[in-house]
Length: 585
Image (tube, rainbow, N blue to C red; front, side, top):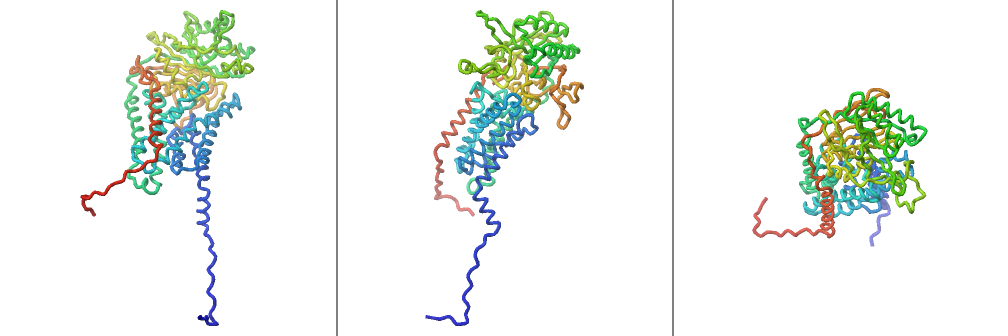
């Protein structure tokens, strides 16, 4: 055994390992990566979902609002963190977007907002299931997944038209109400086709990001077929826009000079009998001012008069006298009632025509889709202790037909059939379609947004009228109690909107350019607009009007095909070496 020399010092012990700050930082981020990703997706998703909606000036966010969540789904995050993030973002976003509902009921806002957020956000369940299954799959599977997810979104939007009586407020397509470039497919597919394209682009952006940042096989791909497919869809929209909208002024034909009247009657006094005389004075003053220029047609908003124009002799006589003074026919929104055989009253929320020569016309329109708890109490035997928000009459009775109104207007005395939509009926594409199928040549929307204050509600509501105009290729005239009032042409272009820059100042009708002071849509007053019609669509029914929601069925088929294709793991075919493969360097 060897003994170390006495003067040899023992070898020093190695210094303890001390992690550098960067390693600690990387370790912390690795341990909390899922929480950080969830927070980022929540913030980006909620912010984009709010800012893309009217009246925001950032509708392009609709192309990317879901992309962060779709990108994250590629990494197969835990269901708990993923759904908590995306569903939470949608619940917050919808509650903020519907904030105007707080002017009527805070309880309703905090029930409806989160409910819609959960309903819309349920689409991300499909996203979380689909995206991790795409890695390593051939291009056909990945393109099918893009189309299938877009189809699933359309199917979800369609269910909102009928579940719990229906509330398809702000479908994704409504974000593009001021962007003609992507709206034109609605004449063929309905607004569903616009939503389809927007979702396809969201998924495509996420797929492209995944290709750039992924490791291994997916990054090695030279092309991103998902992105190419979405761009083809988008290019199709642009080509259709070029065909339908460019240089279309040569097809415009003069129809009528329409005077829009905004009486701006506050909701707090609208049904107060002690204020009836003041309301009638306001209506008379504003109507005669609007009639001064000799319009062909006067347009009042929904439920304008304090008493029923149909059923109340005084109210009928007063309106007929005003129309004779104005020397122009009028379409007005008002309530009406008729006595039934058992002496009970049948109340309706309707549109009526009054002419200087004949007075109140026999034909009228009764609102077909009533607002639950606003115009009637559903399940009355069970909920009979509740009262509806409109404090007049009993439960309103819905109409059962389009109820077209025949109007003689214009310099040549043209006879035009008018299709009416009252209040939120224009958010239901089927109602506008039914009216056009019945022969409507022009659509009018009469509404009272006085319930909801002077915030985003009127803009959000008006966005749906743009969609209905494109779907049916019919001009839409919209009259609001205090705004939004104006004219939308057959291609969805807003040709006129009533605004006022200074209180009591002149009323402007030309839409403001970007950066220009547009003024406010909320004011008392009126203006006359020269309305034209597009000769290409006179007497023509669009593909959507003829065939309805066929695209929803196609979307459902794409969603089902995606599920069938991806539900089993994919096994890539094994490439065999060829014995006679030529030698290459």
